[in-house]
Length: 289
Image (cartoon, rainbow, N blue to C red; front, side, top):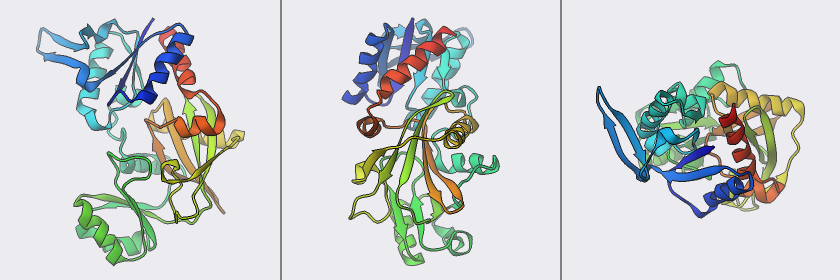
């Protein structure tokens, strides 16, 4: 059995996937988009080679990171489908346009009737819409190419909002600010929640709950209702492996965002769950189906 995991860069913390594969007796290869030697497209020939070996020799490929290389990811997905290589996940297989786009994900979840935060996606010229549609204070964030709480701002008025938009010169997601005492990361693999944690922000942080921003992680045991919500969220987006970020309000749960390529070091440290091992188990089982 041969499984590939496609990532943007080979970070040393990704090597735990190879360790998990050895434990499960799986032939697993980590590779990056830079490893793609050639892409040949013609009527008679469609060929991809990765690190000198054709992708079609794999039984399954998990495209973990696609945001920065979306077109390549879609081409690789199509080629693998033509050669009966299984793909994780189905959002890429169906070429769904919201993959790794926070604004589009929010739209899809909202249309599905799931508990999203009131939001608008606007450019700098439309900033007058914030007060009537979301109100101040509000949270402004980039929707692509960001993680771990970077490029997220809490603003109190239109003047502060203009400064954020001027800094980025691109459309941004504006969300209603809902005071909270921390949030919850629920890690979903396939049809089950494998673990979860509560993140409590640091004393000096006013609104971000990210561990990278100093938040403290506490293990959290989801109940059946919470697990069902997290699984429904990932299924709605067509994601098989995802981190769902939620927080509690007086009226129930609200979705902060969904991470299709979630980090796992903080979660592992808080819960002791070997997430790479759980992921490789899942990939192995899917490859055998």
